[in-house]
Image (cartoon, rainbow, N blue to C red; front, side, top):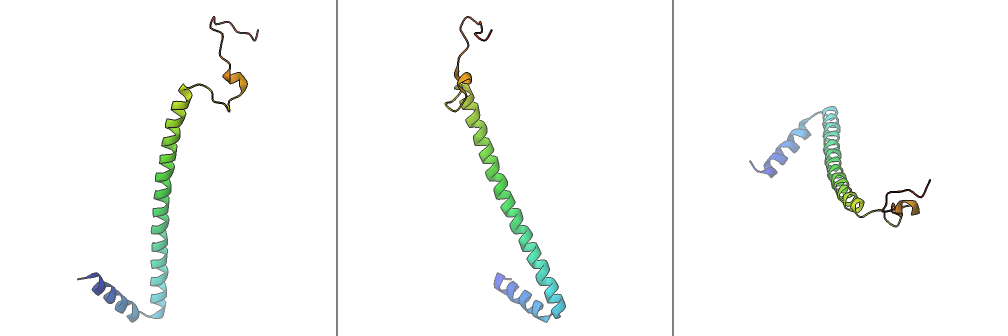
Length: 89
């Protein structure tokens, strides 16, 4: 049975229903379609968020090895003395 035949059969069956049953069917079909759409959007968002978080993890791992960046406070950019003593005492 082709898709056109299935569609025509469902359409014919729908037209045979009482008005109340047609309304119920339309509400249920709309809710089902909306739920499927929301689920698909949620999956796409979850996938994209996962990709962003993965890229952020890789980016922070590579930048943490390079030392403080220009946006870090000046004190974070200072290096400890090589002899191990502190100048804060």
